[in-house]
Length: 634
Figure (tube, rainbow, N blue to C red):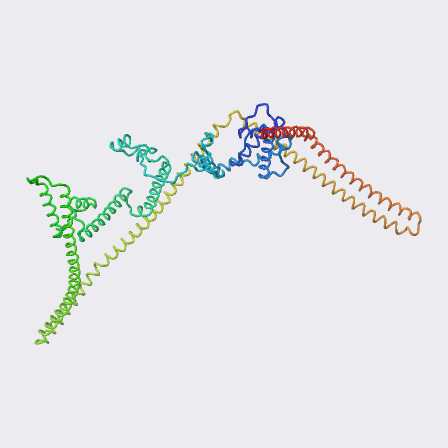
């Protein structure tokens, strides 16, 4: 068992147990060391398990802690008997069996490497998940229970449990330098100066500090969604356009600018038709430059617009001239004059609005009448054209009637010459048409081949891009795995001799194989002996039957044979009793051996010593309870 104890101790040291060099076997373990080893194993098996590593001094606390450890072991599937006494009262066999069970339940390193993502980001995610699970498992406490008397070390935990310092998710726009990580592109000096001297840090941009995390998350989500949307658009429409990325972006920008300019022109035209808006040259130049087209030329405008412009111009010129007159009027007179002017202007405006509405109704009537007249004119023009055509045809026919025979002959000659000319033209057209059709077919086949090749290339490009992403992701995972393995290797103690442990394990395996071979040999011998016993028993029964038959035939005639028959029956009975006694003796010996083993096990448990310890612990618990009662009464 020394090899097994050595493997258990080495594994516990790898889990972080601080043991002296003198501890080489479980016989040197103490209850405190056993408890620490079990806690470390349970934490390695289940990350959510929480328990202190050291035994408390109070006996009642020891009892509670050891009982919780026993329950945790039973939840893992430990079938043997386990309780608080297993940890508090030494029993090397039970300790060894329990530790071997826990070491078998430890997660395998290969399973971790294959099933869990490695790296610093994965460790951070796992830490965050563990922290969130711990926070979700804590009970809710009313906020008013946390007062100024709460210790400073517990205020953060109280805040998380009570939710006293929570606030709603509110994000503001934050700006960060763009293009600083790309070393291939140059940043303009003005932009760089703005970044270094005027742009505040991201942590200082939100007006409320509590909005910092929400703003950063919102910014990151927006940029990520924009990038994903651009990649999807480029993979679908960008690659199919056969343009470079810069050309595709430029064309898309130009198309959007043109659409915006068209919308602005339509809105301006609608506003001008209603007399609510008038544009100047600056706005027209802006639209022309924005849409990358010629300057947008506006019409002359309505009479009302010119009148309004002339009126405002005259008012401005009049306002610029300061007449020489008496002193300025008072504020009350100015207010009365302004109210009077406003009333007059409102009356004028109402009259103008009524006039405009009447004119708009007249315009609608004239427009409807004009549309009807245009339709009527179109119909009449079509009828007139048909009648003119018919008239020309009838006129030519009437002109040909005086010389009908001569004209018919001329028409027949004209028809014949036209037919011959059409035949010659058809022949020439066929001569030109055949090579053109052949060339068209060849070009169409080439175009279909090029299109198919282009489609295949686009599919291959998409597949290569997906493969590139997968390879990059795999490389990142492998890089993280390499970093974590290097960190674990650096944290491992370098004084361990791996070959010695391997040699020890191989020796244990060799001993097990040797014991297995011996057990198999004993089993074979046992089966052989049992087979021989069965054969001899059958042979003995057959011999008895034959002998009994021979003697029984002559038993009636001869007295000696009758006596021999009686002796044979008694011999059979005695032999059977001897065989049964031998079987019972063997069974009794096995029971004696089992009882000896049980006695040895019970002796190894040191029941008397453990009983004394239990009695001492019971007295200690009584003293602690007495002290607690005294404290409560005082």
